Each structure stands twice: as structure tokens, then as C-alpha cells.
Length: 344
Image (cartoon, rainbow, N blue to C red; front, side, top):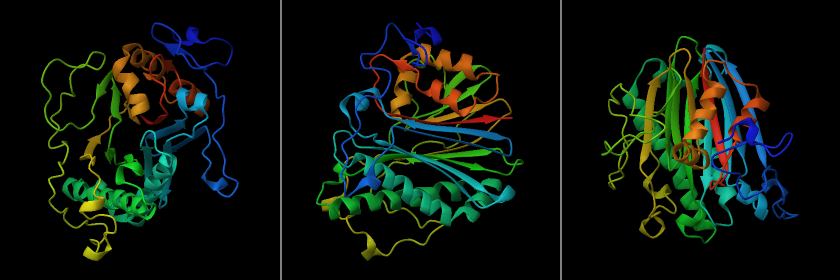
């Protein structure tokens, strides 16, 4: 076990667990560059933050140890955006992870974030109103449609590139945060692997929406699911039934679904995930890609380390948040993307 003491030297990221990871702690190789496509280069690390209403946001996306060692681009993408102004503003955090072992994974992830960002931005007035009014049904069905349409564009792009749908796809996970200090509703939605956690009263809760109530004992390190009833915060299974029209955008014409026919259907489509929850003062909400969710679930010392860092001390600065997010765990070397929200 190691906290700050797990660092190998001054400025080197700490690690937790029974020993240091195999790879070096800092970037080594850069990803190969195409002189005619320099705009597609992906930085090793991006970092952002903001404070609106009662919430303080910190967000980071960093290349995993494995990709750094191999000189591969970061497959995770991160988008933070504010739509509107004043108390009517709506903050979006979107994160995506491209498919493993595919050449265009970073481009697919960036496309997924850009397309959901454009859809949310065009609908932000109605979304903000529905969040304030707690119109949960409209939110869930509308965001489901926007997500499906954004990921449908990935399938269409795959067809344009002559690729199979699973060669140009991405997980997509998002948070909507109203700037209105009177509204404490936080909305999560998306598709694919990752984690949604809440630090409340010094204890971590794994509040990722589930397909069904799981059998067996709670996961070690996170305890039972939250005591409050999920009240429908379950996954919506894709049974091949058309999604109802979105309240935020008109339903696409039947002829516009390029790449959505049987030949181009992605066989690995995951169900839609949605959760609307009310934050309490002192909460920390953490949304993350699988690269951080997996070690959080698999190495209890990482959860304890973040509890010591984040419980009761207020939001960290950007540099401190980066240091927290990159605490390393042996056996976990994927990209990490995380957005944490501290509630005053």
C-alpha cells in the first residue's frame, strides 16, 4: 500500500497496491503524426475546471501507461462545455473511449463527444427547463434519442470509411449540470463501460445504473447500492423497438439513417444508461471511463486514497486533481478520463 509515499521520486505520480506498475510513470513515446492530418493529434493530457452555482467541476483525460509506452494516441476524449448564460446555463461533460486495437479509436471518441455536444447545445434551453421541473420521463426519452442519433453517426462514418461498425465506435458517458444554484439535480446518461460513483459521508457509493438487481454480496470497497430506491434508474434494453421521438429534436427521416441498416448494425450496441439524482451539500460525484472505474472497483486502496484526499476538504485545484486522477495501480494501464463535482 502506498499513498504519496508510493512515488518513485519527486514529482512522479504515486501508486497504491502491492507494488509499482510495470510501465514508467511519465510519458515516453509520442504517437506517430501524419503531416497532412496534424489536427488529429491528441495531447497526452487535458485538464479543465469550473465553478457554477453550488458545484465545482474538475475534469481530466490522460493517456494510460500502456499507450504512453507504445507511443499510441489517447483513445479517450473529453468535452466540457457551457451552453447559455447566467442561472439558465447548462454544463455538459462528455467523455468517450474508442474501441481497443482500432486505428481510428481516438477519432471515433472525439466524434462521439462532438456530436453529442452539438445535440445537447442545440437543445439546452429545453433540457435546462426539464431538469429544473424534474420532468424525468422527457429527459430520459429525449437524451436516449440524442445519444442514439450521435452514435448512429459513428456507424454511418464507419460505412463511409469502409469499416465494420465495431471498428469505428465508442462508449459515451455524459453529465448535465445546471448552473442554477436552486437546482441540485445532476443528470447522467450514456452508453458503454465506465463508472458513476458518489462520495457521501466519507463512504463511496457505486451508483452506476444496472440492468437488473444483482445477486450476491456487495462489491468490496463500495458496500451496498445506495439506500434510496432507484425509482426506475435502470438500463433501457435495446429490443429492436424504435425509440419514440425526442422532445428536443425531430425524429430523423427514415431515409436519413445511413449505415443503420442490418448490414451496418453494430452487433455490440450497449443499452442506454440514465440516472437523475439530487445532490446534497458535501457530496462528490465522480463520472469516469473504464480506465479509472476498473481500478476503483478492483483495488480498495485507491478508493480509500481518494476518500482521504476528497472527503471534507473541499475541491482540489486543477494540479492537485490531476495528481489524484493519475495515482497508479499495478495491472491497470488504460487511459483515464474523470469528471468530479464537489457540492457546497
